[in-house]
Image 1 (spheres, rainbow, N blue to C red):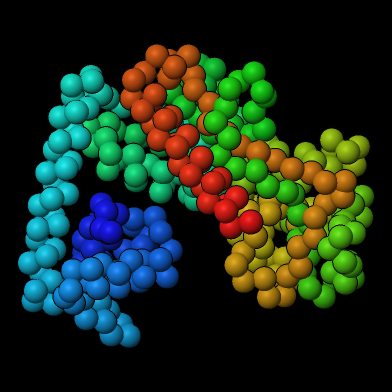
Image 2: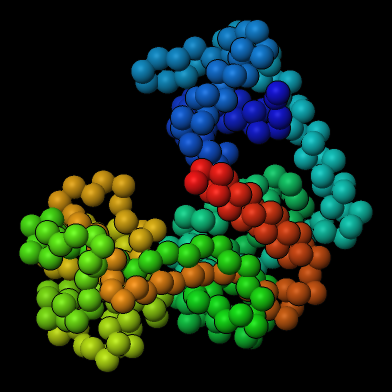
Length: 302
């Protein structure tokens, strides 16, 4: 059965001429997009696209389908803008602060979906360290902020959780260890160390100090997790990174959990001003529904 997601994917594919870029635009995987397009063409009983190794082109009949899809989505946007206006949501602005690793990965698909549903609400995303985000929230400079390890009383909407991992060159002696044994921070204290912060005060150095340790040979400090992974791959040192930031390509790398286990979680928190905003309430509800849907899908997958 066709839904709005199918029509948006169809238009995105026509606009980009590429299924992978279209999938990224609508927030699904490339394989999922390819299957959806095939299902849509089968349901319609016509070929919308022709495919080659380099590009996807729209057929003559497909052009007419795309035109109708554009008109339908445009009318839907107008209806939603009218609905927002009736609820006093139009022309409102939401200020959202986050640290880099979340603002570049988790937030874009969430905000894209929100813009489609509420075209009259502008979301301004501000990037800062986790300390800066906390300061912005306390001063009311932002309506929403993604914070690290939020206390229970803050009523945060948890967006994600992951473990801290020791990242090692595959040739390192510790890389031969079984995953079940893990690596203690004390074993890394005297190693050549690549300190990655991810724009956060909570990082390998703060974890070591919390455990009463010092990292005695910090060779390089970088903000980006990917840079740290690249330096470790080159054999320049070891690093401590969140599990969710590990690269898809783990060649020449080995990741082992820290022991005792160390975890982080990050969640969305509203400022005092944000709690009074109808627009923020609408975004909060949509993010909550997205988190719930992902959790249910993960549970079904086992």
